[in-house]
View 1: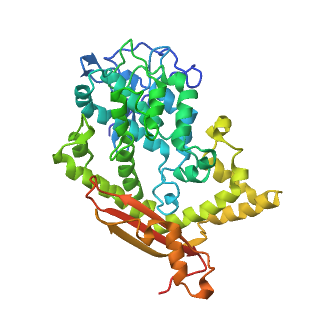
View 2: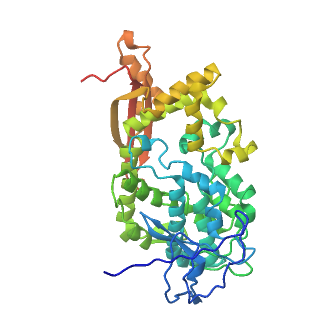
View 3: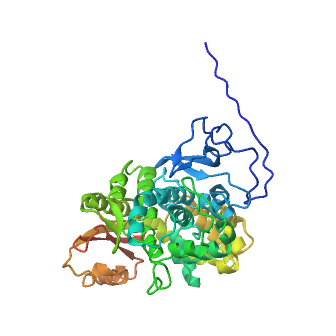
Length: 467
């Protein structure tokens, strides 16, 4: 019987954290036997990319269940910043401790994926998108930087677009950051400019391309790309940058193209929920912006419908919404104990503030000497045991056509719906605790497509729906 022997070589790294050290051994593109990345690359002949010899020793691979192998740059020249240095930075590593699906993981046990997995996937999506779109972007915008610059810029924006998120993702925006006039985008833009700007300016390469000697990544452009558009904010920006923004804010973006596939797969909803290859193949830039050929319209419609289905089946699942409502009241009462104030004034503390840190902290509160904190700790214990305060008693899905008036419906606003329900309740039930949530989902790419609205009415748990 034969034997299989494995050999490994290790080199002690002496670089300081998040800085780039000189390469520990000479780089030879014809030998790739030593690799400090996540996957070891076997010796193989080099390939050419845009006339340049591809250097496998500089590249590492991350294997992803959605995209397969995702390459990133690990080894660079002295004075440069590698993509690996950014991936290993605390601002990115904290994303491992924040779930992608803010509270849905309490309902879908397999959906334990994190923001970190998503942003790595979005970075890979950025490279795929630029490979397809750069030629048409160059035709539309004559003064366009090199493809290497555009790809590196887009990859970095995709990697960092969620860097401002707090515990429970978008929930934290609505229930904490809003108090300080912030969103995770505005906070993320500040982190990019002031915390990561020096490192980002030293990025010189991505797995496929090398920047020209005269080119330098502008962190301000990255910060601008991840921000939601506002009136007149494109006036001082080059046209090509404004067009690139559609890859981050639009019908289909490097963000939602990844999370739709990832959330569907990790939750068990569907292993292949839409046709990504066809959607990208028929996309291009025109004078009007990001455009899709009619042959790709079916793929776009399928993508938008898949996204809408995920909202109905996962994000707005009745138990997920009940958990959200329980968490909202508990979070409101707990805010003085959770974080010291405006995250912009406490960035070092915010870097350490994650779902892990929050849930570990609140688990200790029942033993607190502070009576109020002790009572809140008992309420957190109930939530951690999935004992929620609300239960859905009714759920309706409505479809609005192009000529339908949403604003004239009682389902257009939660408070309007709640008043209508209370007016029809028996007098003895008129003061019962009852809350409604109204959510609208646009699933079609054109104005003529119907708009689907979902309304969930919830009541405290002691109230049970009539059979």
